[in-house]
Length: 84
Image 1 (tube, rainbow, N blue to C red):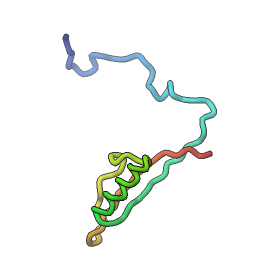
Image 2 (image 1 turned 90 degrees about the horizontal axis):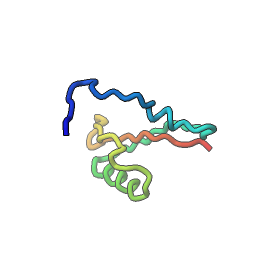
Image 3 (image 1 turned 135 degrees about the vertical axis):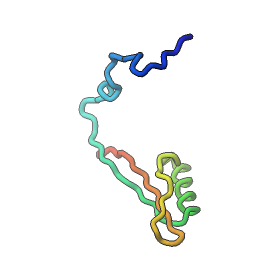
Image 4 (image 1 turned 60 degrees about the vertical axis):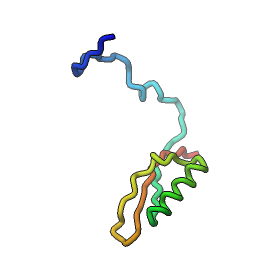
């Protein structure tokens, strides 16, 4: 088997997947953000609870970010929701 490592050696003429996935009359979607504030252990517990409920995968959340307050962190989840 031969693998060409030169950039651009394997060009594709296929259309991007996003063009082929457009559905007519699809319901509108919006972006929402969930913010969790608390200690690192509380944030991790909340993310695990939401995962058990099959709401979001743990890797979908941002890594915990410091808020600048003692023992307080925050994590962010951005999701697309269908508007009915």
